[in-house]
Length: 594
Image 1 (cartoon, rainbow, N blue to C red):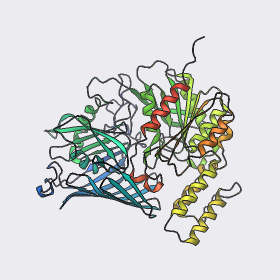
Image 2 (image 1 turned 180 degrees about the horizontal axis):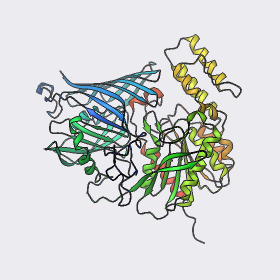
Image 3 (image 1 turned 180 degrees about the vertical axis):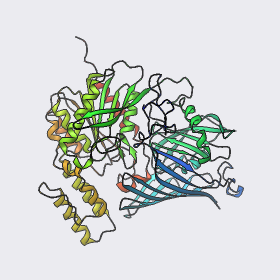
Image 4 (image 1 turned 120 degrees about the vertical axis):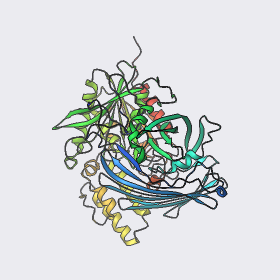
C-alpha cells in the first residue's frame, strides 16, 4: 500500500489504536496505501467473497437481513498473502449454521482451524465447535448452549460450565464471518448502543453510527457503518444493502477485511473512519495521539519501531515496551493477541509517549535472530530507551518500562542498571528462573497432549528436564515437534538461567507486578516470589495485582489453557489496561514542589 504524500510516516496495522491524525503527522489507517515494505508487521485481510444473496427462509424465523453467504477471505500481511478463510452461512430448519476454515502462515507459524456455529431462530448460539492446529499442536473443543448454561468440552475431556444470558454471541479469534450474525442481531428500530457478550464473558457494545455513501466504479452505494466496541477496543463494520458485511476493521486483531467488489472504495471508507475515534462520531473529534515509524540506533544495526506521542500534552512522560522471546514484534503479538499494540494505544490515550520496537531479526529491524543472546536483548532495550529519552518532545526524566513474559525479565535487567528509571511494570513475569517457568509450562502441555502414549510422554518429560538444565543442550530430542521448535530457539536458551527476582533487588524503580489469575504458562504464584524480591528495593513496596479470569495473554478466559486461546477474544482486558495506566501515572508523577 502506498501513501499518496510519499512520506514514510506512520502506517498502523489497524484502523483503531486510539491514535488519530494530527496536522503534522497523519496516521494512515491500514486500508489506505502505505510505502512498500513498511507493512511487514500489520495484517490486512482483503475479502474475496462470492455472495449468494437471498434472505433465509421465512419458516426459519430469522431476520431477512441475514443472507445466505458463501465466500473466501484472502488474508494478507502488508502486501503479502498469508492465508485464506473459506466460509458459508446457510439456513437450517431451526435457525442457521456458519462453517469456516482458516489457513494462515505468518513468519513460519502455520495455523489451520475450522469453526462451526449453529444459531437458533433468534440468532442465539446453540452449539459451537472449534478444531485446528498451531504448528503441530492440535486443539479441539465443543460448546453447547442451553437453558442459560454454556457447557464446554475440551479435547482432553475436561468439562466446564459457564452461565450466560440471551445477549451472548460467539466471535472466535480471527473469524470475520461471525460479524454477519452479530450485526443481524442489532435492533435498528431501537438504535443506540446495544450490549452483548462474546463467549465466554467479554463485554461488547454495538452501535449503528451512520450511513456512508460511497461511489464504486461510478455507482453510488450506501453502507451502514457500525461501531463494535469489544472491551473498549473499536471494530468498524460496514454492511451493504443486502445485509452482508462488506468491510471490517478490527483494532484488537490488526485485521481488515474488504469485500472484493468494494476494494476501489477503500479510500472513501478510510476517510469516513477518521471521525470514529472513541465514543464520538463527529468529524471534528479531537486527535488522541499521533504516531511515527522510527529507526533506533543499536549496536551494529538499527531497530525499527513505532513512537506514539499523545496529542495536546507538553513534555509527556515516556514508556518503553520491551520485547522478549514471546512478544518479539513491535505489536507484542502472541497467539494473535497484539498485547503491546493495545497497551501502547491505551497509554498514549492517557498522556504517555510510548515506544515499541521489533526485536532484531524481526519485522523491519536489522540483524539476525540467530545472533540473539541475553546481553544483546538487554543492550537493544537500553539503546531504545536512550533513543526515547533523547526525543525532544518527551520528558526523558520521567521514564517507565513495561515487559511481558520473559520480556519483563529483560526490562528488569535494564532497570537494575539504571537508577533513573521511575517505573517498572512486570506482566505475567516468571518469579524464579525463566527455565523453571518454561519447564513447568512444557510439562503441563506434554501431560495434556492426548496424542502421546505413556512411554512417549515420559521420554518427552525427561527431554525437557535435560534440555532446560543449566548443563543441558537445547537439542530437544524426544520432544513433540512443536515443543522442540520452541525450546531450541536461541533466544529461549539465552534466557533460561535468568532470574528476574535477583534484578528486582537491585532496582530503584517503583514496581508493578500484574498477573492473570488463569495464567497456565507462568503460574500466578510467581507474583509472590517477585513481590518478596521487590520489597528489598529502595522505593517502597511493589503493587501486586492478580486479575481473576485472565489468562497468560491478559485476555478474559474460561480455563486459561493454551488450547482455548484460538476460541477467545484477542482483546486485552480493560482491567489490565486500566490498572497499568493508572499505576504508571502515579509512578511517573512529578514530585511535589518544595
